[in-house]
Length: 161
Picture 1 (tube, rainbow, N blue to C red):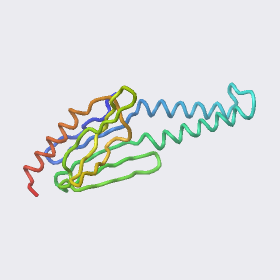
Picture 2 (picture 1 turned 45 degrees about the vertical axis):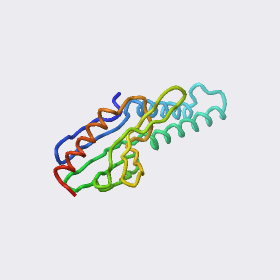
Picture 3 (picture 1 turned 60 degrees about the horizontal axis):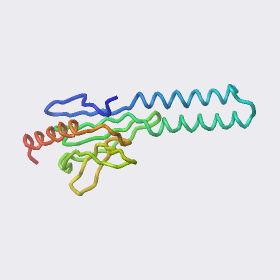
């Protein structure tokens, strides 16, 4: 499963998408199956078992809704903006920033036990970062970060601020 991919790469626009659909589908199916087992009394001996399964099912579905958004990052050379759009099942969150404030795209690392986990972030001129992914992954993002930084550099050189 590729963590992120470039879907448009032109001199005027760079669009990156991220949707971990395999993991999201697994969690959705698990949640719906657990909820169904609780509602229909499958493999349960008491009312408490059914209530517990319903609670676990509802929690799993809520987890899927909240933590598996479709993410699209659009770098637009003409409007001089970068937009991060996170689309959830019930809402969308959009964050925009001027391209001129963007220093670079880099990997942010975190250690978990013995594994190095990374995600891509936008680094702004004031030192703050905007995460491009909801979570961390063990897959390297060097190639994607390199391509995005090359696009950003080419855009700055062709359209000086």
